[in-house]
Amino acid sequence: MHRRTFLAAPIFAAATASAATQTPTVQANGDGIHHTPAEYAALLQNLSPTIEPDDYSRGGVVARLEQSVAAALGKETAVWISTGTLANHLAVRLLAGERRRVLVQHECHLFNDCGDCCQTLSGLHLVPLAPTQATFTVDDLEREADRSASGRVAVPIGAIQIETPVRRKTGESFDLAEMKRVSQWARDRKIGLHLDGARLYLAAAYSGVPVREYAALFDTVYVSMYKYFNAASGAILAGPRSLLENLFQPRRMFGNGLSQVWPFAAVALHFFEGFPERYAQAVATSEKVISALQSDSRFEVTRVPNGTNIFFLRVKDIDAQAFQRRAADAGFILSAARNDRFTVQVNETWARATPQEILARL
Image (tube, rainbow, N blue to C red):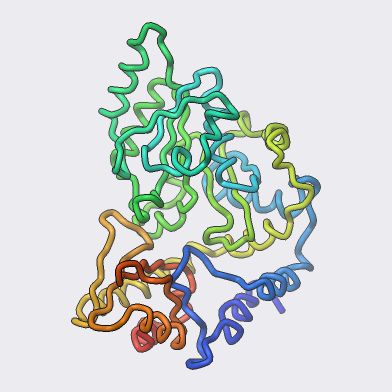
């Protein structure tokens, strides 16, 4: 079976079908495709003729993936990292150098969810900006730059990180016009810029802005390989060769030079190829479904302002748990409701069915 046609089985076909419909399941409970161990193993078996193993995370299919991602982002080179936490950490560590102050969003993953790794392991000082907001402004940067320079001991800013979309803001995107102003402000001052673009390809589908245009505003970019490229783990950090060419050394220093990562990289490369086109189809399908649900008095739909692939769904006059079970029986998988409201995520499984089929299930 050809590796691309394998997308039809078992990943998108009867092996993931619900018993009630015998049609492919739409998984509205994550950014990517939830593979069972058996499905993941079957995919690797199908891909095995094309897989060249790596050697301590270098060469083989890993190098092919790195080259593909770097080219797509318009960057000179890219490096496999096993986690996004470390990819972001290494990026700001390299960009900051001896200037230890790094400006970030108050709501970003690096500041909130990484155990103070930058502070503890690299002696960096993260300065959070714009609490409760997805976007900080150039005015915020100016105020922090003045404060950093006006103390008894001046502390220069070494790097700025932007995360978009922001998971803690339910997938809200950083304002693009402000992002461009921030980029110019930083470049004028020779301050390094890093993009936590874990979900960058999702943002691009909703904004219509190609990933290369986002990436061009930054020195380095991280993209997740597991969230929607469906690897069991992994991340890619892309940027200039002069900065990243020896990154395998600090990668190993941080205990991340795994002996073999081809089972991750091969799957990520498989789904990376052609993803924007497949995801565009899924988004188009979901928008038709959302529009129909908004006009149906039995449902209440809430969109996230400047949002991406997440929306909220409430079903009126029906027990949420019962609805979730019935939707699953019909081949539409929802996460458990909170306060009778479902958080619904659009991923490429929405392209498995027509809008009419999805609406019929709901």
